Image (cartoon, rainbow, N blue to C red):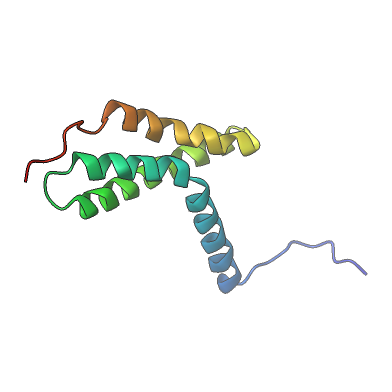
Length: 103
């Protein structure tokens, strides 16, 4: 017999579901966030690795928030590329320097 009541998840199940969703959306955001990290690496005058990591975190937060809003609007899978747009536009606006730092 199939139970027709409400489905209840334990706190461990909820944590696992949220972890999988977070890792999945972070992986789907990589085309935009890696581009933004590259911009941060190129713009840095000191510590380019840390700058790239900071830009990547910022780009990931922007992408995930935009994707969540787009999914809430009912765009389905189209919310993923829509989520890339703000980060990619920000990467274009903050385009990296053309000259490498002088040694």
